[in-house]
Image (cartoon, rainbow, N blue to C red; front, side):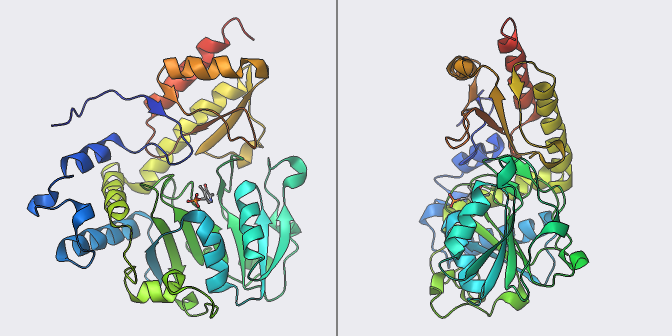
Amino acid sequence: MLRVTMKRPYNFSAGPAAMPQEVLTQAAGEMLDWHGSGMSVMEMSHRGKEFISIYEQAQADLRELLAVPEQFRILFMQGGGLAENAIVPLNLSRAGTVDFVVTGSWSQKSLQEAARYCTANLAASNQADGHTTLPAPRNWRLSKDASYLHLCSNETIDGVEWQELPDLKAIGYDSPLVVDCSSHVASRPMDWSRISAAFAGAQKNLGPAGLTLVIVRQDLLDRALPICPGAFNYKTVADNQSMFNTPPTYAIYVAGLVFQWLKNQGGVAAMEQRNQAKAALLYDTIDGSQLYYNKVARDCRSRMNVPFFLRDESLNEAFLSGAREHGLMQLKGHKSVGGMRASIYNAMPIEGVQALVDYMLEFQQGRA
Ligand SMILES: *Cc1c(COP(=O)(O)O)cnc(C)c1O
């Protein structure tokens, strides 16, 4: 039997990211024999009654957690966020014009990939200020009759987050809004009145890599381009309950355990409060320090991914090795940005952020 109380280091990885320890413990306990079936979940037919019950529970729990309205379908797909950069235009662009709001590395990648399938219009960008702000919707250069508008609601690398999705109808824009919410899904409630489709790789905030979540309004299912692969066609996937081909069964099972864990934690609204408190603790420490700084405008800062820098960059290696000695892992910033990044997803308890903050203050002593 596994020791439930085993003390593990705090893991600040941006993804694949830390999992709730309770979920890992439960999955380990059920590894050889799921609920008396005599099988591991990864050994089950995806069409058998055992796995179907796992799948249906995961669907129902996620719908409840994210308050997904009835007219949306929840698809469990594969390929990750990067595959969705092609799959979304293959399904929704009608080979027409798509508007992109580029706010960092991920939305930039989305635009570049989509341009292979449609006319990708750069409607707005925060490139000029180094991806540290969010462009105001009233200044966007929007297309007439766009097939949809794409934005990334939390830029994992740059640390910029939409605190509220834009109200496109209020600026006279009727096309659907598609959101890449990979790195903050389930960290806060989602406003479905403003969203037409959303996607997320699971490995940040939902579970293991290999599962990709897509939530799409039913009336958008039937507009895929003829070249869209069957396994990536939203209507085909929806019509077959995400089992047109073998779905990532084990990843779905573990994500389902995360959904149950989230419900036990009080749901997404309760997570949001905790995430706010965690982020405030870390940003307040950074802002109050002479050694550390963060470049993002305060009202656009991500609650999930906190990039920060040391004013003396020659201390970077010492900071990281000291962090490891304190049981604080994977704090190195993305190579395109440098510095440090603390990803503090749902699974990171406030005690982990407190341990990081304590270490940062200790490291700063006598250095700034
Ligand atoms: C991680 C990430 C992706 C890419 O996901 P993959 O699963 O590696 O394809 C896309 N968008 C955002 C916002 C991400 O954080």
